[in-house]
Length: 429
Ligand code: GLC
Image (cartoon, rainbow, N blue to C red; front, side, top):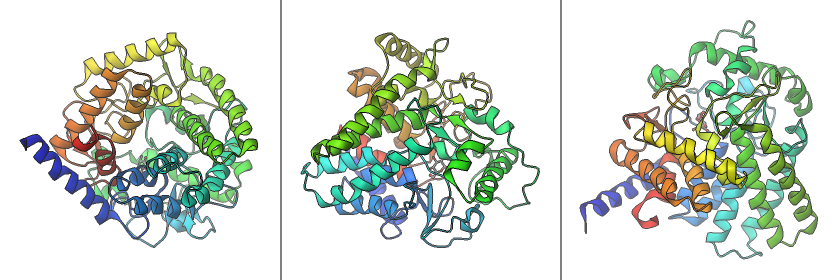
């Protein structure tokens, strides 16, 4: 056995142990202490990790997540199955009034993509009972997005809180957050900075605005119509939009398998709408897709890792693809580790601070998968190779410096371990 495969075997064991250790019985916390509850898109990615060694547990992760779905179809971004004083803002701040208690906002809808993947690995039987039980819930969550989060009726996804995007402090949200007043926010004690170095985290001023947006939603009883119409923070997120489009394609595959013709039609119409709508996010100067503010209509004009999800979403003209690949190749020349969450040289770029520069392995996995599907194998392999090298060098961190590979944020992180098992371990190459 080569020393590399020996080292990988060891990392495989460590990754499985991280998932087991962070398992709270039916759901997995992203990182004990820092994130002690169930997070929406983390759980979807984590299920892919479990699927490599415990298929039953993989399904269960999503079943538990969907058990917290709201009556209107929304899947909350956090489910507070149990109390934990070590996190702010906890369930009392959100005051969702639901069981289980939850936050009042959502997160990128990767669940349908993951369910399709689990179902395929499990034999792709249309009669698969666990897939069949999740299907109507996924459909309800997609319809929730279509109904409440598509204000332009062009198939793009609006976020009303930066936490919904999953890319919390991306510079894309700076202008929108600047409009949010934190004047009336009561003093609070942050908990994140007692778990990790403050240099990795959003600033205090940013955090106050995040809390102001929660108070805004809570004051409206989390009514999805009012929140969507009145929120001071309203952006079209390129990340959620691309992930939603892809998720609709995956849900369509399930609808076809179930011969649910009405839904097949509904989703096809929806997909066509989004395919066209995405051009509203195209930035010709930069040659990538960018998020866009809905209050003033301005494009964020920033190259982020989410700018490269068009391949994963299955959109873009040949000319757009060429520009995207050019831009990604330029990034590949500028940093040793792809894909930085914000392009170096952008305003407020910081290689260590959360979503303002660091590499996140879940984004890498989605981008690489899209590139593979577009037969752009060389860049896909470069991204996967960089992800692998980051873990080999530093371990299973929350995120990594694209410049040095240093691990940042929390260590022993669930979704990083899951991405290793699912995508990067020697067995899957
Ligand atoms: C941070 C990330 C978000 C993730 C959560 C739990 O808030 O920005 O994407 O879901 O941590 O890991």
